[in-house]
Length: 444
Ligand code: NAD
Image (cartoon, rainbow, N blue to C red):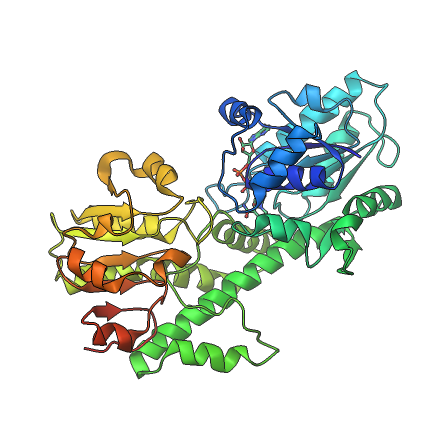
């Protein structure tokens, strides 16, 4: 099939590349000329494990193209995916200007090119309930006929950054929101190669499909937040959240995943999607109490480590050198959008701390935010030189089994604040570290 992907970010690039890998001919569009130049030069603009091999192969085979021109992408494409940003507006609702703007451009182009055939507009961005209807109305306002000249489909994306390629290639489920049998049939054909092992393609109405995405993210954000609250209580009552996690995770109704306590969720999706769902509910006259609590608790949790450091040094952070390991909002990505590390860094900078940071992949993106306010270490051990504490913000594997002796030698003080519970508290104390983690006992 011939496909266009509009928006070549984390979702669009993975979507386009994986569809090309299944033999489709794909053209990816982005307004960011530098990004497209890079992609046309053979360089990936993002770090995503496993993406490079598919990107290179499909480019070489001539199935994967990149352009800044939407008009170049439209004539041949039967299915047009929108993988555009939907950032939160001031009131928390999703900003739909990108999605609706591009929909309008496509509709205008179709009217000016009546010879073009039937096209499906697929929304892959996370958008509030009712957006598919609004997109359809845009096309209809130009006199285009749904079911004949076009159809609009909601097809939310569930990939996780860091394992996006695997998630896309083997999705646990595919959701297709459309009431058009014609569009449902084409979309099902497109996705069949990805669910060969029997995972379901669920076809439902557009609104349920849009709601499914928000419900999934809001549930996951709630699960993390619940565990963070359990961790906070564990600390107060002398329990260990790691033991509690294992204890409840074995109950199949709860499940083992997403039970790790830490410094709050971040990333480009959970914070904005929870806010957007709360906002949608409010617009419809319903106060979604749990989500308000989730957002409040998460804000508190993201400040927790900075406050601990502040309290430890009795507010005397001015000029104090501190090391930070991990900047990405989670491991295996270079994405720093809404990263808890950035919240912590901002707080510590406000108090005058001298921060040396290291991340295996997210240094450039962090430099773009903080510039010269931070020192960027060339490696994880170099970051420790002369630092009076190490603060761990991301659970990269290479931080899990470091050379502790080397760490002790480099740190000015063997003090660690671990926001990801990477190490064993008792063993750390035995090795002479003063070690604080989340929801677990501290051994003096
Ligand atoms: P992103 O910011 O990485 O990518 C969006 C891209 O769209 C950017 O490259 C931007 O330059 C481009 N763009 C903006 N306006 C454009 C226009 N008019 N024409 C063409 N391109 C344009 O965002 P993302 O993380 O890929 O997310 C996209 C959507 O997918 C969001 O709604 C997000 O909520 C959703 N989503 C994201 C993830 C994730 O893990 N990142 C997962 C599932 C769903």
